[in-house]
Image (cartoon, rainbow over all chains, first blue to last red; front, side, top):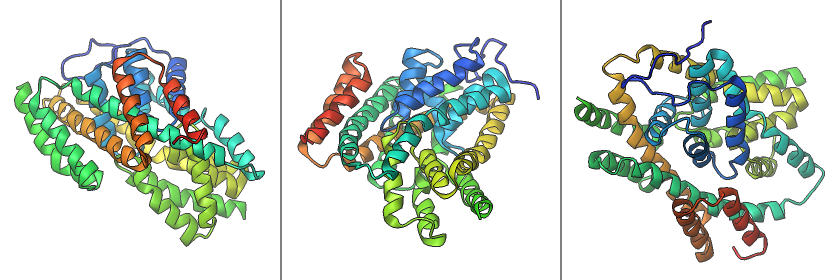
Length: 195
Length: 176
């Protein structure tokens, strides 16, 4: 099967990739970096690594790709790994990026599991996790605010984001329901703006 | 006997991989129901302990949880089978989505769809943050840790692992 390389210059309708010369190894390593850093949630780390550190995606490209990856089944970040992997190196790239995300954490996970099975007390770990959870929540808040900042000149997009926040965060509706309700409106607004 | 367990693992996890839209966290209750109630593989306490171990490690929590379940039930083959069963079905779909998305790159509908989904993703990230803040922050100190972390992330270029480590140390010291 041929790979889907991004050889042509990214046109306006594409989800462009800023780094066209990414190697298979780099795909593995970058998603391993995201995965191994992500104590308490991976989305914040994906943005830090892909947007701030590597510049593989712009701020809006990250939001667009996350939106796409949340709308299909499976963990959003595995989907993102597969998207970027496929676009750079086809099936091989997809496998490299997804394994980079899924396999390296086992190096930490399995020793922890063995320690636990041997009767180690996890109380200190549990306490540390409480701290990590509080900090990670703040990190995710900062991530959302930075993403929203990229849409500061588009009040209608911010209204859509606020409705999604209220639907899931306040009313506690299922994500899929909010997506199904909001997507047609938001896509219509985007269509009018881009026309 | 191990072979039967492996097949059952695949039959349980592969469909879950495909229904989990918007993140696999939505399938946690279903995994619990099957592993504890239907198959009786683990007790409630064992499940909670494995979930705690999965959360303590960096990486995707649910994938790590099912990996631990596979390991506990069937050793090394269980690890491989569980990881593949939870990731390959949705992975193949994501691959197809990527190919299709690229194929229709010139289609007039594609750009608005992509641009329209982005603000919803922004809202979902903020919603997850608000849910995490409410779940994690059971004291004023915890709220302060979340707030200070957010401000430092927005205003400084401090390494985020320092922030997470500092918060963990505070908690171990009993401040939180």
